[in-house]
Image (cartoon, rainbow, N blue to C red; front, top):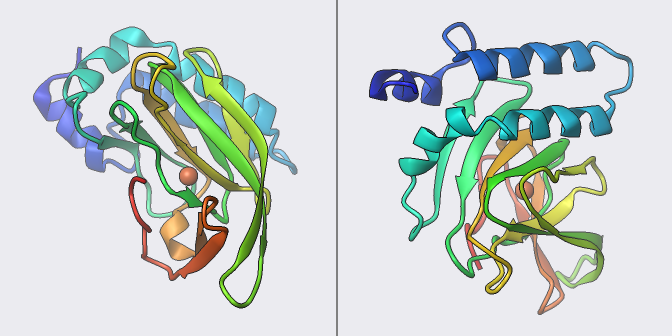
Length: 202
Ligand SMILES: [Fe+2]
């Protein structure tokens, strides 16, 4: 079990002092990334393997209260792949957004409902949004996205099971990019400038 100190360190760490499970994950991911084309199925498998390490994640989950949204960075270099543990409480769904980088999502605990959208933007702010995929992700499941088909939202839907604690793996720092946020109910979109994380939860 990591001490408070080691937990605090991994929150800000870019490499050297990563705990064993994260070090192994980063090394294996680097190996996959050395291929000409990144195999997202293999990335997804790697993420599911990491999410299965209940002994490693139990103390980290215990530090994120279930009643409120919370997140803890696990791997956060300046550029390139980064990993964060994200929790959304009962009935809370995130806003719909694009990434402009590849993404993987795998629950460690609870049920994460994931929706991917096909989005066509119009200059006047309207957007045609079609739900392309909807899945209730449980422990052992993974969803991956690759731009430009990277418009999604995820979070908890009441009645599906316990609220989720999920690993989110991002191919790069999405806040460096011009992105978009969507409202599927109103059929609208708005631009997110670099640095704008967008609205957190619906
Ligand atoms: Fe996302």
